[in-house]
Length: 301
Ligand code: FJE
Ligand code: FE
Image 1 (cartoon, helix red, strand yellow):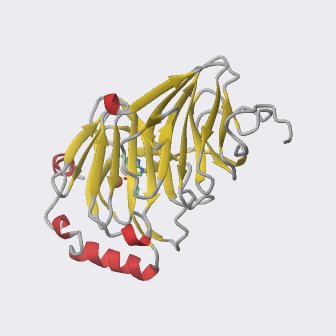
Image 2 (cartoon, protein in one colour):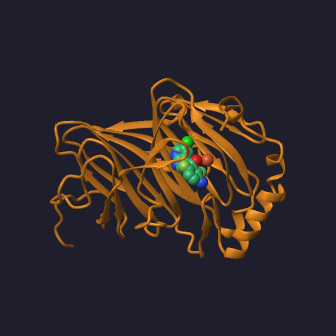
């Protein structure tokens, strides 16, 4: 056995293979997102389509828009967002809350600020395999107090999906996914297993961390790190402040991708079909014919 600096639970820690700084850009109506996955240089990191760190202040927001063929996962960091959909499903998610929405065959909804000041959070788009693209829409909503947490040796984790430090999330992931929100105190050292065949990334939220190789340079907030092959992630906080980042992994779907904005299918024919379904209010978009969100009615979007 070669000697390793950190003998522990991992045999082959994953290394950082690409690094991106997510700069702010405009999306929705007046909203600002730092998009890391889904931008030109990184169109798709199978099964992940988009990762946005969003920032919205009223009257900005994401008024009535459709989705088909994937899931949106919204995790609030600050403030609150109200969502309403064309089925009459409505709710507000506040700090630390999670909405895991499986759009499946179709959702039309609005996502708008629900509080004063700036609402911040993360929205991740996870692809669905061809056999799941047209399933019935479904929500899993978990309020902050019900998100499983565990702590050990200066590490705190909020388990959004998957398992860490022996604690499991109740969220059902149609595309097998792990989503962990880690906070490391100064001096903490993390070793987190990740299934071998999965794609995985880190997105830094605050502080500075060392990822993959203990001799690498520290990485700061708003950076996305794509991880290479291996059985897990090793991370260190050698700074004097808390380091917070998310670690997300998923089983690659390995199918062709055809995307038109909020519609994600396998072929261009399916995209054309979807645009037709949406325009003609059929195949899951029936209720879009007469629906407008309360936000749209009252603000004239
Ligand atoms: C969308 C542009 C968009 N990131 N983060 C085009 F902005 C959106 C969209 C969002 C979004 C919503 C929230 Cl609450 C947070 C986001 C993009 O709604 F769906 C398309 N098609
Ligand atoms: Fe949306």
